Image (cartoon, rainbow, N blue to C red; front, side, top):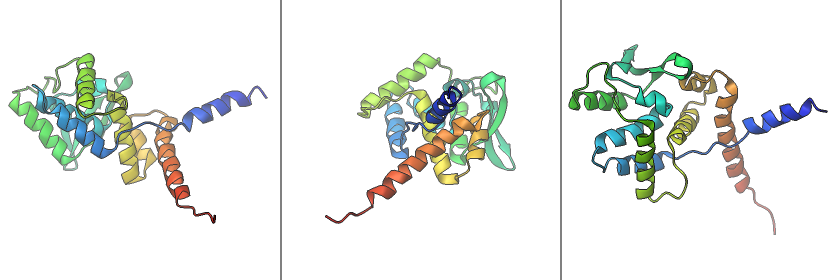
Length: 196
């Protein structure tokens, strides 16, 4: 009986619903972040976090030379957890915005695209969420969850998402799939009609 308790606990943890932002909420946050003194940078950071699923430390470590191409399409070369290097696909428009930002700021290949500290990134996101009138708690890692949910919703490929996010185990990635499955189950069951 004792052996079942840890497995059950692990199962419950892996089936937990992951909080996330919908794309329209992210758009609203990016718009609010863009209104500040460093608006272009701050709005771009919000969009980058959502569209790439990067951890805040990974995003703040990006340089203009991180933006590369693979088979003619844009990718980011990212130094992740444990200093592991991974390559992730990004939208063409995001790559253009990153390159444009680097050009306008006259950044060299090794300069950081976002030369701020983690605490400043938190402030930017908190300020944008307050200005957008959000009641839910918004923090940098929430964009990672949100981007992961959106990628999974569009691709339906948990293995590709696992590699994209740099997860060493499928357990974390499956939490995103479980969130979508539970939401679908609620929607399906809301349509059930009972006779009165």
